[in-house]
Length: 123
Image 1 (spheres, helix red, strand yellow):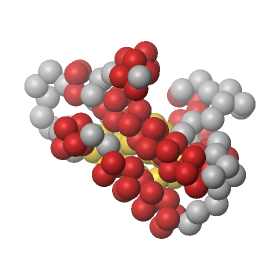
Image 2 (cartoon, rainbow, N blue to C red):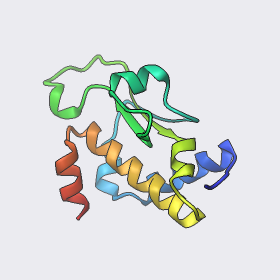
Image 3 (tube, rainbow, N blue to C red):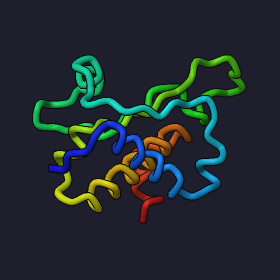
Image 4 (cartoon, rainbow, N blue to C red):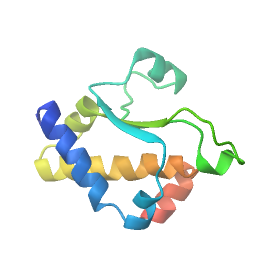
């Protein structure tokens, strides 16, 4: 398990965002990227997560592929969860890579990609 301050975690999220391919990051609009320690009980219920399942990140919003011309939307949100991410890694390098991977995954959902397509693109 890695322990970092909230400020360090924010910095690692920013570093991950900058390291992602430019074309994907440049087109992100009207989205907040935030951090929380853990998912809320409501988020876990909504996703039907079991007690033994972790959630590293969550995209909440209307994917670009589903907007069909809608322009007046509240901002979408990507949340990265510090505690599950830190429990799942044992070195700072692993932690940094898991943050980057999770951020990329949630941005994929922003673009309307499902888990299978995100995994395909990662390879």
